[in-house]
Amino acid sequence: MEDCSSSDEDYYYSSDRDSLDGLENEDSDLQWPPSKGPTTKVITKESLLAAQREDLRRVMDMLSLREHHARTLLIHYRWDVEKLLVVLVEKGKADLFSEAGVSVVESEDTGTPVSSSSTAMCDIRIEELPSDKMTKMDCGHTFCNDCWTEHFVVKINEGQSRRIRCVAHKCIAICDEAVVRNLVGKKHPDLAEKFDRFLLESYIEDNRMVKWCPSTPHCGNAIRVEDDEFCEVECSCGVQFCFSCLSEAHSPCSCMMWGLWTKKCRDESETVNWITIHTKPCPKCHKPVEKNGGCNLVSCICGQAFCWLCGGATGRDHTWSRIAGHSCGRYKEDREKKTERAKRDLYRYMHYHNRYKARKDSFKLESKLKETILEKVSISEERESRLRDFTWVTNGICRLFRSRRVLSYSYPFAFYMFGEELFKDEMTNEEREIKQHLFEDQQQQLEANVEKLSKFLEEPFDEYADDKVMEIRMQVINLSVIIDTLCKKMYECIENDLLGSLQCNTHNIAPYKSKGIEKASELAVCWNNKASSATDKCLPSDCGTSGKRDRPFSFASSDDSDCPPEKQPKKESYGGGFFDLNLPAEVLDRN
Image 1 (cartoon, one colour):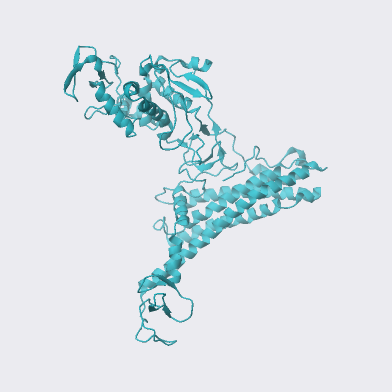
Image 2 (spheres, one colour; image 1 turned 60 degrees about the vertical axis):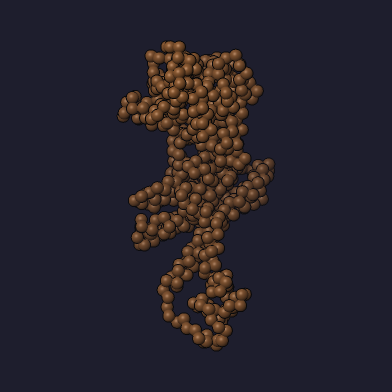
């Protein structure tokens, strides 16, 4: 959904400041927070490797680890470096490593053929094999290369390639990714590429603060948030979405409320409610029958006659007062209650749905009017006039769009907040009524001012004299400030008085932002100039489609067949150029 944003949210300008002396106090009351820059980043195919290396470097330098050990730790803790540090401080390095399945052996070379004797025993095959056909892992377990390879192939095909455990019984150690790449690449080079791809994409798939953009068709971008995962963001492709549930931006509705609302609007539950209220099932063929006359004896198309009051089958002999041989004057409480409840629920749903849809329709119509209003601005700027600055119009349009969006999603929120589906036991009827009146009062004030702002923006100000335009300008500025304040108060009411007062509050909403949904900035591809021997090992070579989603990540494969697979230069294509990922960082930067 489009959300217009402006580079400058200050509504008053120096070109005609003198005419707005009466608004100085309004402006001083509106305290904009200091700009901190974008807190969300767009991760493209070019910057994915850089983003992953940034976190890997922090853990490697902090704990003096090899790259695959650092990656194992980060995948276990879902790439949350802060959580990793907390566990390190609270439990120590030994527990940190053991929980993640990291076995650090400094005195021996691991992942290499066993050379201490001419033969060695493979405990899986129960067979003596030459030592050059055996491989030892960090955990100390040694098996033949064929057994290791088959184990790795099975795990990669099962989608467990990010954390392949040792094949030994009850061993939780994670296998060295270089060994996996080497052994699998000899027989199954396609699976080795898939393994590398999964390792690289784990930064997004396993990271709580990074998610794929839900655009269709997929733009290939991922979004990383810095502070709170309960927020709304805009990708560089223009799609705005809720970062928590990946659906459209729906604040002030919580993710659970929005999921229930979309399901309710999508399925046929309300059609069933209408049938329950306005029809009765035929006692013979059980098809719904609608009454179209005043007589209580109705006939189905199958020929069966029955009583409309109770639904019982009858004969056709009847008078205006009674049906022959039939009496249903006894009150049946359960059936009456069920019908009345269905009717009440349907009318309640229609009340909120009609207003939700009306606000959405207004938003769409006013989006089309944006071009018309901007044409008026162009005409006004060309004519000779004292007024040269019309940015108050674009600011007013942006404020109108944002407030329309807030209003439209406030109705699904009210439907569930004051209904009995989610919070039946959280509030008494008296408390629910008081809170509902409080919320609806604020909602009504916001609606009234939004309609006023819409009316002034639709005025043909390009045809008015300067004094009339100045009057409209002051009204638009005042209403923009008032609407922004009312939106903030509504969010405060929801967070503190409504959701905040619940005992079991599992509903979180994205915070209100005066400048609209934040547009994520692209993550800069900057390589660390610090060269380290620990990083000279192979990095994941490519990032492409993993079967979960069609992502346009495509990289070149290596042709250096003379080198062993774990030392082959991994070349990554970025727009036609190639980077050897085995080179030190400063060489990459220079290239």
